[in-house]
Amino acid sequence: MKVENERAIRRRRKMSLVWYEIGRCIYQRIPFLGRPSKHGANTIRRKQLKFIWTMLAIPIVHFLVFWIYVNIDSILLAFRNIDYAGGGNEYWTVDNFKEVYGMFAREGASSMMVRYGINTLIFWLLGTVWGIPHSIILTYVFHKKLKGRKFFRVMLYIPSIICGAALAAIFASAISDSGIFGYMLKNVFGMERIPNWFAEQEYAFGGLLFWNFFFGFAGQYILYSGALANVDQEITEAAYMDGVCMWQEMLYIDIPLMWPTISQTIITSFAGLFGASGPILLFTATMESTWTFGYWIF
Image (cartoon, rainbow, N blue to C red; front, side, top):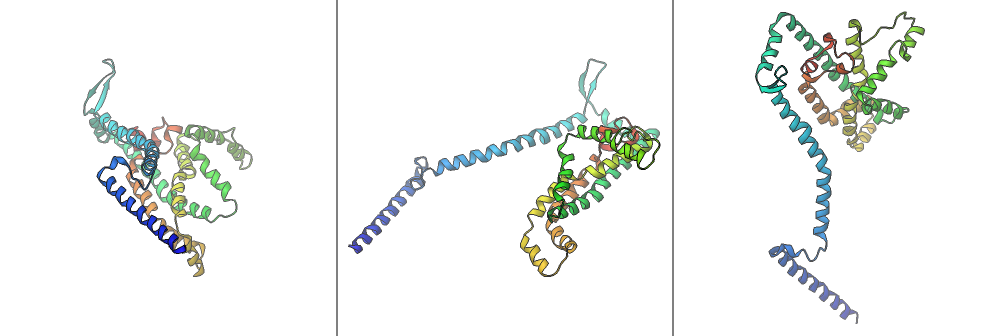
């Protein structure tokens, strides 16, 4: 009886294989009939593709509108001008390029263009030479899960999630004569007069650098956190078994493994050299001595 049952099971398996092969051959020749042995596979695949394209739709539209359209429109704007005296009619011209060339040619204006270039270079150096190493060290310290890391991480993230204009207003109020830092400077450090930091020529550019010094690296920290999270912990554990310290781990293990991300930020910083502007529009929009090339173009 047992032998007959085993034979019956084997026969059923053979028949199922035969029917599977028949169905596969039919599907290869007539695909719309569907795959007989994988019921619902096509439906599942369609749902997966629908979900994937739904998730990709937002970044694709964002790329098309805010990168492709904006850059094409910026190129067209370089050859376009407006006749305000004639009723605001637009016309095509190369006068914009002539005006830029004239700015370098005229004696008084050329000195300001040099000043714009120096300011741009200072902002770029602050963001690259200070911002990148500082972001790497902060990322490593927070990754080691030291005490108080959550508090400092929140304090670091806050400037990047608050509206720039609102944060600038809070900062300007805090360092003003009636603000908390102004109060400390008068009553703790004995300053008789608290200057209007962003309205006085002597302090305005230094105030912009101070802002960039503390608030200009949150984006890089987010990038480096993702790169450091992908470092294999087995490599770090093996290094500790060989007796490395925390600084050696950062210099010889983490930074080399994070280098693709670090090198990308360095390359993009060079590419964005002339766009390094700082918060000029928020604080010193009319003070020409603080302008950069990027803000002058704007």
